[in-house]
Amino acid sequence: DIVMTQTPLSSPVTLGQPASISCRSSQSLVHSDGNTYLSWFQQRPGQPPRLLIYKISTRFSGVPDRFSGSGAGTDFTLKISRVEAEDVGVYYCAQATQFPYTFGPGTKLEIK
Amino acid sequence: EVQLVESGGGLVQPGRSLRLSCTTSGFTFGDSAMSWFRQAPGKGLEWIGFIRNQVYGGTTEYAASVKGRFTMSRDNSKGIAYLEMNSLKIEDTAVYYCSDVSPWRYWGQGTLVTVSS
Image 1 (cartoon, rainbow over the protein chains, first blue to last red):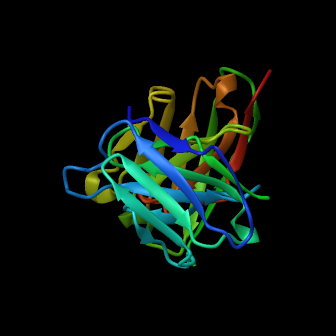
Image 2: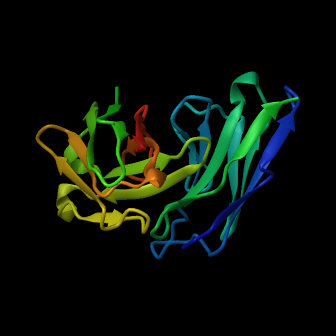
């Protein structure tokens, strides 16, 4: 199975400041079709996950442009350019390149 | 508007069975694979499997943790996906979510399954 790791696991951030979350996979996430199926999800307290970014860097419809994704192969990053209060929650990376699909452990974003 | 609504959760004893439903609207259900996930209390997300669309024969893939015990099915005429859970264990206690095909754009609110004696 592909193991997904995230750092940090907790991230206290000041409002208006940037935040960055790293995700690493135990194997390359490049699929045989040439795509890299790495996604990022936000989960606010008491809510289902919300897709933010897919295929490394494509923002899903309605996601603010302060969220961006980057990376390649086994190393990926989610960046929030200026954190807002509504960004509080847990962020997960996930891979859908190889069965079984797997998630990272989550990074809790909180406001200082 | 795309909607997914899970139902069927509840309290069940270990070893018993439960069937969850995911009722959908707002998209062409028959064209979409449907995925299931779960989240144990205070824990992270776990993909437990998916069922392909009718073009791919509605075949399924499962996580090792549920393979042989859980079965996914679908009723394309009704737009409903099902998760049949047998031989339930205490560690199956979780909120169960359904979603569409990867990258999982749409999610239901989840339904809580509690396995306890």
